[in-house]
Amino acid sequence: MRDQWLFKSETYDNCSCAVNCGCQFNLPSTHGYCQSAFVGNIVEGHFNDTPLVGLNWAALYKWPGEIKEGNGKCQIIIDERADAAQRMALQTIISGGACEPLSNHFSVFASTCSEFCETLILPIDLEANLELRTARVDIPGIMRSSGRPIINEFTGEPFHIALARPSGSFEFTYAEIGQGTTSVTGDMAMAFEDSWAHFCVHHYNQDGMVRERSRLTAWLGR
Image: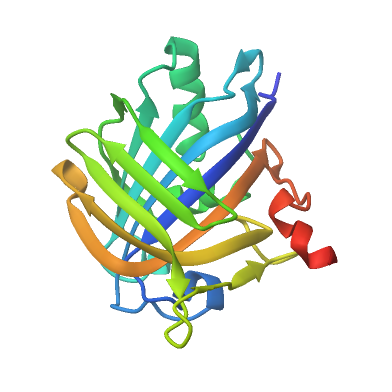
């Protein structure tokens, strides 16, 4: 029988591009390569009968050129609180398995990676506020990151910009945009400062992306 699962994560992503990330605007990357760190908390989720709610996760990626050119490198980090069944479930989903091919960003990214580092089981300290566009991440010995809103240079106040993707996206329907600074050590060593960050809800199941309007879009009805 086919696996039945749900993965709904409130996610912070910081990548090496400037604040016009080519992935989101169908443009080349800022530097001719891509490095990216995703960290999230699962607010709804299961894999068959295995519950996933409350667990944190991270996925680190590096491509030597444009993502579409391949030869990427990936490492998954799973919350140390996960039991054996939960670890297997998260490993399967985040590595792009048990789903329609290329139906979510995990599957798409996996298809462009040729090297998969050992999955790490570690404490993942994540504080993120998607509405305020703030985040703090600490994965001991591996990663530190902070996210913040873009600041209006004229007023000194947070500058509100967002992306709505009702179609054409395999990652999210809506994302709040900010900036982030990240440092990673180990097999995926990388660092970038004041670069593109987005705050979104990743909502997937075995068939692909669930195109349900995110709670973050409430202000659009005002």
